[in-house]
Length: 480
Image 1 (tube, rainbow, N blue to C red):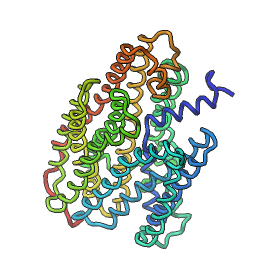
Image 2 (image 1 turned 180 degrees about the horizontal axis):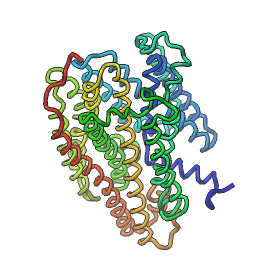
Image 3 (image 1 turned 30 degrees about the vertical axis):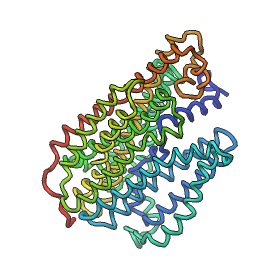
Image 4 (image 1 turned 135 degrees about the vertical axis):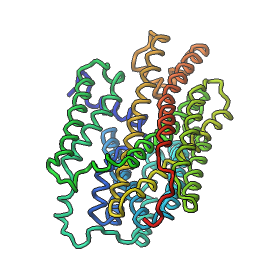
């Protein structure tokens, strides 16, 4: 069986490779408006625990996967569970705190998340290179889950916003048609961006069809939401009244920019060290420490400081400026750039993003009534995850296409598959076998192509800097 001349097995394998390069955090593929709706209608504690268990089930499937197809299915299950758990943490902390302390508590999520970002590649690399094999990079989640689940059952209080309402009535409040259409337009868009120029030419029927499907489904989603087809005004998945709230929409866009400033460097800086400095995947995790350390520190520090001076506009303005400067400097790097300069640039962009990537959640919640807090969290979470997912897909597509085309011009006698293997680092032996001068030229091409990703972060920093000027300057109401 084939699809456009490509076997299903090879298509799935290529999809898996590309997905690993685009999305290192499986929870990014979440449909956050859906999770917001679920948490708004069911016991938040129960839903959160179900999501954690689901994530562990996906990890078990990945660890035991006998083939690439099973591994892809396991990753999808992990993404579903991980996304729900992530949104659950933000919602549970939000409804259990008031505005005066909420920023500090939400800031602590940055600490645990940053620790995971740093230790994940290190532990995963160590396990992969040991007798435990790569499978324990997934099985270890079962150990952590086995410890965490009983603690969560004991410590997290029940939080049921619709206590006493029948389960069928609650389920009917979920906007299933809207969710399906949202998944459809996001999936088709990401597939078109990811496959274009790699699996299929940009002018191919497959890519054109994917873009057409994206256009049709996003228009259908808009019509369905506006006219409440298959749902009601109160239950539609996208909170359309938020569109008329200037402050919320500014925060939505600013969070998208902050997310891009956070995740693109976190993905492309390790690639730089692997190609330019010939570092192992394990060592690049250590190289990322300056970025994550300052990112986490500023997330936590800003959250604590907000308790004493609850103004968010200055932090977003300052963070945008630092992110813009850091992005601009990262755009200038080449294979001769010193590690010290890379660390300095990383610190600038990590500090800038950390100043407001989590703070937006607190700011958005201060603009709505308490009953709408889960919806506001889902709204901002969608901005965060959708923006980072799409931006990473676009940046990665630009990088891969630019690098592959340039390398093919220098190495016209090797196959397109081998060129792709060099860029994806699945054919390192081919790169190492080249003449030192040619190899250096190839690495220079790759590093130059990597820098194109920072054009997106430069734009994000500039956009959030300008939009921050239009935010409210007054203190948040800590009595909300």
